[in-house]
Amino acid sequence: MSRPSRSAGRGPREPRPRVPSAREVAYRALLRIDHEGAYANLVLPPMLAESGLDGRDRGFATELVYGTTRMRRACDALVDRFVLREPDPSTRTLLRLGAYQLEFADVAPHAAVAETVGLAPKGVRGFVNAILRNVGRTPMVWPDDATRLSYPDWLAQRMVAELGDEALPAMERMNAPAPVTVREDGYTQDRASAWVAAAVDAGEEHLVLDVCAAPGGKSTAIAARGAFVVAADVSPARAGLVRANAARIGGGAAGSVAALAGDGTLPALRPASFDHVLLDAPCSGLGALRRRADARWRITPADVDDLVVLQRRLLDASSVLVRPGGTLTYSVCTVTAAESIEHATPCGFEVDERPPPEGTWRPFGHGWRVLPHDDDTDGMVLVRYRRPA
Image (cartoon, rainbow, N blue to C red; front, side, top):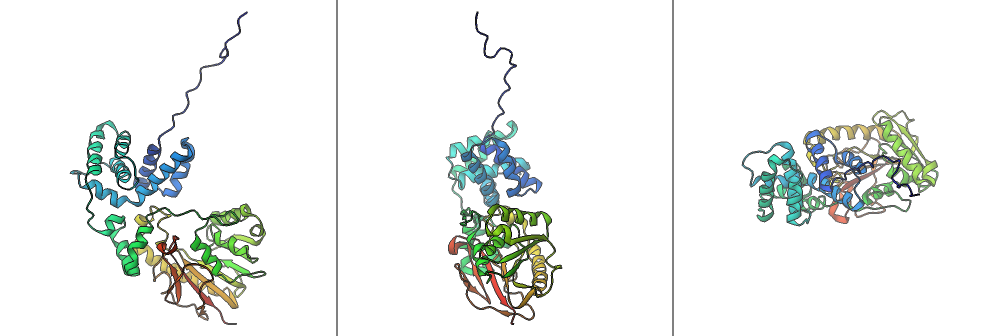
């Protein structure tokens, strides 16, 4: 008797789902970022998770999305030399993707052009092919540094006004990906943020308030030194993120960090009850643009002005919570004076003029500043105050 076929009784095999290319995933993400207002760091991870791409292609897609978004103005300038009539929005995004590969991603020109053209609808493939071939073979003469480095004019001018000769090195460094720095407890945190946590004079049996704590990196670092940290955030979801990160780290952080949701401008906490208060305030993030690819296109001068008002309110409210003899540490991941040293010293406090214990800090007014190119970190300003006993 012949054996039955292995496939006997089985239905037809379902076709395997098609795995998109890294460029295809990047293009889909860029369409949402460019034309739907999506945030790169929120839209890309779920797309990658669903894509079926291997690790190498995920990395390439990530570079394309973040790089093309970051260098949007420069990519447009590369393309616009050869465009006689403005293309439709989706084609504009595709041209940016191709130009980024040709100019900034060290991709072979034939692959950059051919693979990008393959993503275009049939009706515009010839157009996209012609433009990208011209981009690839024509050296670029940049009209100015703002275009070359892909910053809005107002932001480039603001950086020069704030930093002088240090502006271009800082802007160039913020166009490169941030290194991954992992603490001993496994938490990933930029070193400048770790330096801020180290600047809080907290030790064993101290009670510390972290006013704007999410996602919890500074709170858990302070707790690791033996302090008990009340980690607050205005958003319940973000307070939950602090709680989850403390639990994931484990050790001292798990039992020494209490997360709560609360408005830092109207804290429901007893005055003069904390040994130390850390206010890592909401800010423009102009020192951390390398981590936020689309931030330079979202932030406006009016946003900076609004943030200064919010920071002042948070400073005033936070200072009330410090006991006599305690400290108030203020930090922002920006480099602007308006968001840092131009804030008046809180009433009843004096400036702590000691240098920070860790980090590559430069004196900056009555505080300290680190620039992105100083030690390959985010740009940050730190000011420390003490309430006399």
